[in-house]
Image (cartoon, rainbow, N blue to C red; front, side, top):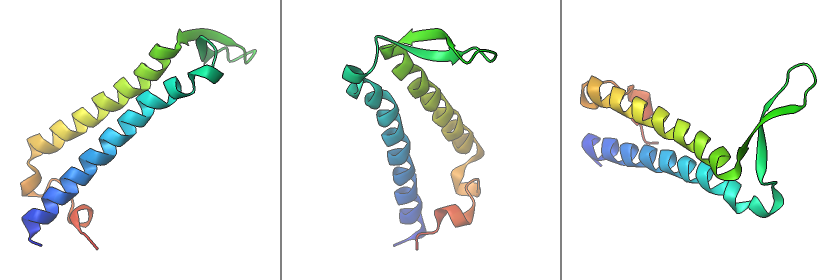
Amino acid sequence: MTDRGRRSTTAWGTVGWCVGALVLLAALPPAASSRLPGRLATHWNAGSGRPDGSMPLWAAALFPALVWAVLTAVVALMLRRAGTGSGAIPGWALEVP
């Protein structure tokens, strides 16, 4: 396999992992919705340890997925802007055993 083929395979593997994590973040809470309350506690009071903030299930599932999507998009854009072909990704990250 050529060096270009390895980079392509590594890039698609990375995209697959990022999309897989996004799907899990978005899909697991609704999958467990029958065992969860209508509103989920999302913030706790530091003094008493009791919840003082909540979100509906759809929002509690969507918010972490949105944070993950934005984070991965920012990293991808930074790597693309730096030029992945010019060594922006370290060599050890592209090595295939």
